[in-house]
Length: 195
Image 1 (tube, rainbow, N blue to C red):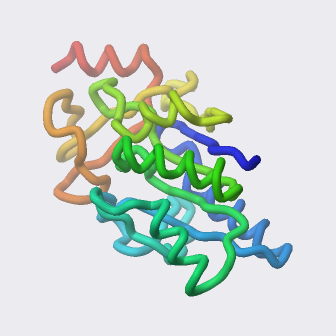
Image 2 (tube, rainbow, N blue to C red):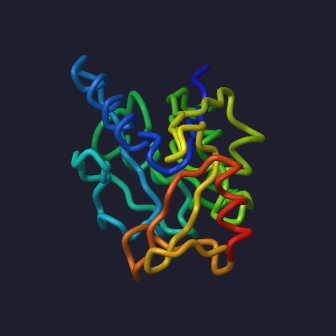
C-alpha cells in the first residue's frame, strides 16, 4: 500500500523546491508524476514557484469543489499511469479533498506527497493541513530559521512592510503588498506585542 505524506514547514523552508526535486528524481528514473496545486494559490498562476527561481508548470489546478480522486482516475484513463502525485500549497485544499488524496494512496496505490503550511499568520490551522495531520501516514517538518537564528515555526504576515495579526486567513504572498516572514515563537510574540 502506498502512503499519504505531509511535509510541512514555515515560509522559506524549501517546500516547493523540495517538491520539484522529488519530481525530478522520479522522472530521471523514467517514472511519471502528477503535479497538483489548488487554484486558491494565485502566485505563479499554473506554475509552481520556488524562491530559488526554479519554476514548473502544474498538471492540475484544483478548484474547491473538484473531486481529486475522480480527476486522477480520468488522468490515468486519458493520459498516463501515475507513479507519484505531488501537491504544493496543500493547506488550501478542502477537508474532503484530503480524504480523496488518502483514498488515492490506499485504493489506487499511488504515493501522494503533500507540501504546505501547518498554520496561518494567526497560528490557526488551515483546513487542508488540519485534516492531513489526522490522516497522513507520514508527517515530516522541513526546517528553516528566523532572522534571529532560532528555528522558525510560525509565519508572520506583513502588509506594506509592517507585521499584522488580523485579517483573512488567505492572502497570497507578493499580491496586494502582502509578504510573509518565517519567525520563531519568541520573535512572533515580540512583533505581536509591538502592535
